[in-house]
Image 1 (cartoon, rainbow, N blue to C red):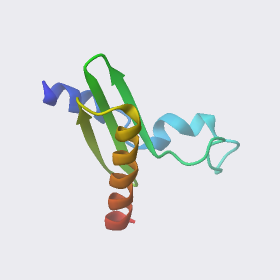
Image 2: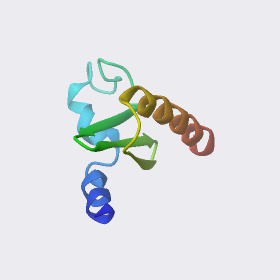
Image 3: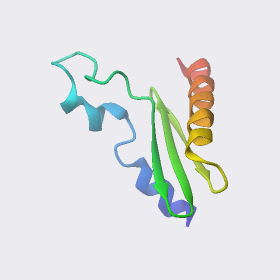
Image 4: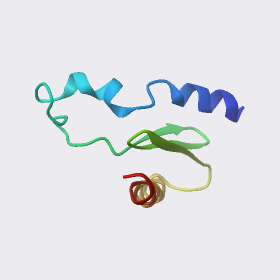
Length: 85
């Protein structure tokens, strides 16, 4: 089951493939700022995709509320940034 989830989330893995059309102009940052992470909400849990440069990870959570998922995603993004930027 996790393999199919990972395969689904790998599509468009770099944020620029999906969000470049929404930028303020050619070569500028998106109108809403830089991409940080995506949280998908399901009836029995969450899937969070975090991307920094060409690296990323998936977080799955079943017993956390959305605020806690966001806190974990921010912490993991910080770790990825420190490791790969």
